[in-house]
Amino acid sequence: MVDKAEKGIELSNPMPLPGNMDAVASGWDRWHDAADRNDDKNLKSFIIKSSNEGALKSLIDGVFGNSPFLSHTLINDWEFTHQVFEDGPRSAFDGIIKTVSDPMLITEDQASIMKVLRIARRRCAFAIALADLTGQWPLTEIIEALSKFAEASISAAVSHLLHHGQKTGEIELSDPSQPSCDSGFIVLGMGKLGAKELNYSSDVDLILLFDNEQSQYTGKRTAQEFFVRLARDLVKILEERTTDGYVFRTDLRLRPDPGSTPPVLSTLAAETYYETAGQNWERAAMIKARPIAGDIEAGNSFLDYLRPFIWRRNLDFAAIEDIHSIKRQINVHRGGSEIAVAGHNVKLGRGGIREIEFYAQTQQLIWGGRDTTLRTKKTCDALPLLAEAGHFAGEVAEQLEQAYEFLRRVEHRLQMIDDQQTHEVPSDSEKLEAFAKFMSFENTEGFAQALSKQLHTVEQHYGALFEESADLSGPGTLVFTGGEDHPDTLETLSSLGFKDPSVISSIIRTWHHGRYRATRSTRSKELLTELMPGLLMAFSQTGNPDTALRGFDEFLQGLPAGVQLFSLFYSNPRLLELLAEIMGGAPRIADSLRRHPILFDAVLTADFFDPLPNRQKIYG
Image 1 (cartoon, one colour):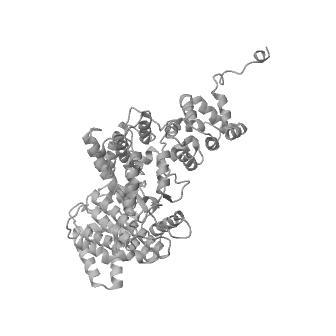
Image 2 (tube, rainbow, N blue to C red):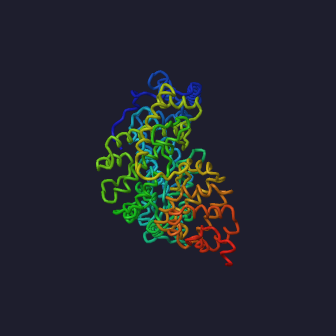
Image 3 (spheres, helix red, strand yellow):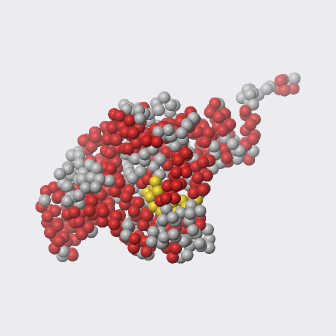
């Protein structure tokens, strides 16, 4: 993070323009009313100064005219906001981190620590927003500051809960003054938090683990039960909404097989999962993993153990193709087509942030096993390193970095408006024009041109990546990695005739998690990825696609292995179409196959699809 002295807010950069002049007038009226109610001379003086100084007034107009969230803090927490304007966002941010990191905080009761963290989070959001809106901090400093606050907040909450566990006699700590040290409880920051790239109103992706050998559980139940309760309390402290707001929405779904595992796993269980059933998309996710709270040393030891899983020195052809599929499952338009700005998702949509991240991560997975210099967590660090290693042109890296910075700025402004985890540009023309002004553009046209340019640049490079490989998106985007539904995938499933696309997506993710014997091996998952477009097309042609696919799911549960069957489907699509037809239109036969999967072996005989013999051939 950049460390430099600041003297107040710098006002030389282009200010955000107010998108709603009525909101500007209302904001100033409310601020004057607040001053009249508390009769504070400092506040009155601050408001008069703000009203008269041109650049400062323009900045505050931009806040009032675009962000109800920031306006609320500006008006109702004026002593702090005055500090930000006078001393600068760096001084204010450092003070917030000092408050959250105070060792005495962990001894407070739960209600008190929740209040402190929520006030700190609101203030942190305001200070960082002003540093962003004025251009006083570069993007790298903004996202590192957001990540640092999250790390400090989660660490304080974890230490508080471990301290409480010692007080109630459930766990013995080696150093009660530093509860997390040697506790055996590990909090891994994943995704943007792990890479210190957190966005403005981000969820935090966490994996929670405990080391049975390291933790000293002394309660009457089990260590697993204790840490599961601790995890639930941690989520409550972070995301429960009170009159003071919330700290972070928390997502624990990146842990191994989240549909069938508790929120906290032992390190042994996690290690066993990754060794036996880990998927390539999980390897990509683990690139960014970092211990951010709890027992940091134990967390680093866990990641050291997983290094051979994450960074495979030798990749066979099938593994490389599966890595390709991280990208190939997404319906890519290779240039020339229009991208509508209104309503566009700058994270998941075409040419968005996720495509830049995948561009870097897929190449890191392929080449990072042998080249340790490529094993960096940050997207904008990985791109130039990959270019320097000769894996793509330096110009590509530069253009993707520029696009990443622009799109992240758009993402942050979208989230500043109402403190919502949104990535979609407004689709309403009036709101789109207001947002363009929040981005410091005079009108919608200027913003649309700038955004379209960056989206098309990303789309062009992303579409060219692995262009020799076959497209796996079929009728549209088909992504079943991670723990959440991809919006474009749900749209594709709906277009294929599935009535409950979210349930279908969840079932398919279950296959990829390896919960069934037939889908447990790496090769079976790789074949499933290749089969997915054809498989879904086959089931979409039946009378009831949802019922047919659920029947196939039950059929898979009964299979002892899957590689042979999936290989047959891959080489002979007619077999897959037959099975889909049975599952969708012949319930009695489907039920027999589900109960006795071996019956399907009959279709493997060479003459199965030959015409039936006539009576003369049968009786002579």
